[in-house]
Image 1 (cartoon, helix red, strand yellow):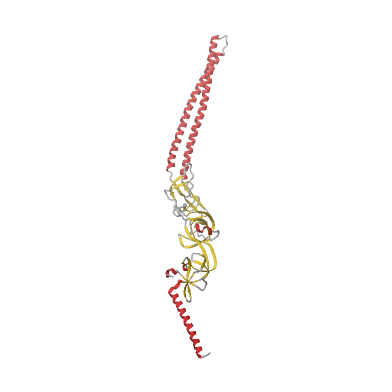
Image 2 (spheres, one colour):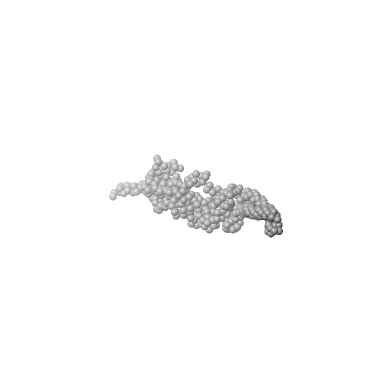
Length: 409
């Protein structure tokens, strides 16, 4: 090769080197200007998640309600043990207003005393009547005996007219004795029936007094077991307080077994079809936001309902099994917020969702290419909360711009 050719060859080499250095300088300068705004397309695992909201509850707990009392279905709360307090078996944890029962008890006591006095007086009166009837019967029987003796005298001793008179007196005495005997028997039957009715009335009054006294005792509800008091929430997320009206069988508070906890959670209706048993869940407690806990789906309730009276969002309820329970930090009733992983794909090409913007109704990204930036419309697939799968038009050598709209694309 001639000397001129070699010179041109060296010149072209120097020009290529200068161009490479210039391109590298431009790239480095762009990196310095944009900092972390450029992100390389990479292979990663994607997890599609949905939000869950719920509350902790005990697997085994003693729910306390208003007592079952005769003809009483509505109660007014007068006392509640402090939520979170430690109680022993037998400690009073619920109390209900007993004003109405106290008034009924006073009335029942008065009725009982009246029934007892009535029975005593009537027993005395009937005893007097019986004595009179027995005396009348005895007198009638005495007359009958006397009249009988007169009729038994031989005819040759007395005149016939006297004998007929004695027979008439005897017949009259027999009828009177029979009448007095029947009168006494009737009085006996009537006395027995009347006293039995009065005794039954007295027994009813005594039972009514005992029932009301027992009801007053039952208005003070003791703890069936030792544990920690937890107030129950209703379907609207509200808890009862002193002064509220409650219905019989309505759960007011519970004393749970803190060693066995689970969670009842809700997910929005749009994600209901993606939920399956054993899917993993991570969550944080409102009371301890710095700690992350793990769980899995243990049960799915397919019914769709409103989240609450104030929030009409349609949700589905699920139950979670806690994989790392902490009896020290966790208490039934604590609220939680977390994420349920409904799908996991491994080793796919992905970019941050922050890099994607809309371009004429299609997803697009701004790509860093050797000759400058270019807008590319990639084919995208599955996504999680932060990344989206790339199916075509990008590869692992590309870098995409994060938040391109902030830069004006």
